[in-house]
Amino acid sequence: MAQRRKSSRGASRHDKSSGSNALRWYSAGVGSGLFVAFLLYLITLPAEGPEPAETQPQAKASTPAPAPEYEFYEVLPNQEITIDVDPAELPKARSESSVRYLLQAGSFRQATDADRRRAELLLLGLTPRVEETRGDTGRWYRVVLGPFESRSAMARARSLTAQQDIDTLLIQRKTG
Image (cartoon, rainbow, N blue to C red; front, side, top):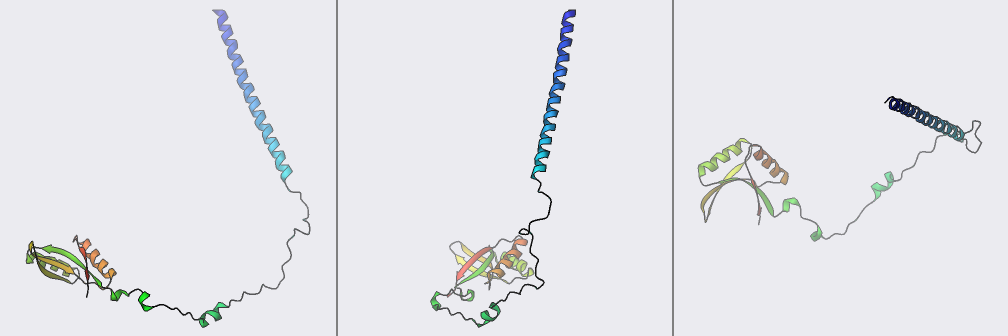
């Protein structure tokens, strides 16, 4: 048993010395690599001294460069463009539109319910009206907003009603 202990101690000494040898080789490799990189850096530096006359920048004249001249200030006001288009090809103006937009804010069986909704809309600053209709299912009272002059006015009214949790239905009616 004593011999085994000696041999195991010798093996551990050998392992420790090989680890320190590897560290020495590694540090020697890193050091030599840094030295070679430094030498290459020194080689690539430009030589100091006066620059040749060809590469030196030319001395600028003391006179400023002439200001650019723009002709469009005089040319554009004198130009005229003529376009030959038939009036039939032009799109219709929005005011001549054959569709008008309405918002229906509710449809009720009882006139009192329709008047209550109309009062809610009046408090919002809108101008509703109640339309009575008769159909296959009986008499209905519809609360209607509009007609609106523009889509933006219709959108404003729709957002006001949406803020008060009043659902609206967009209705497009053709005129004429």
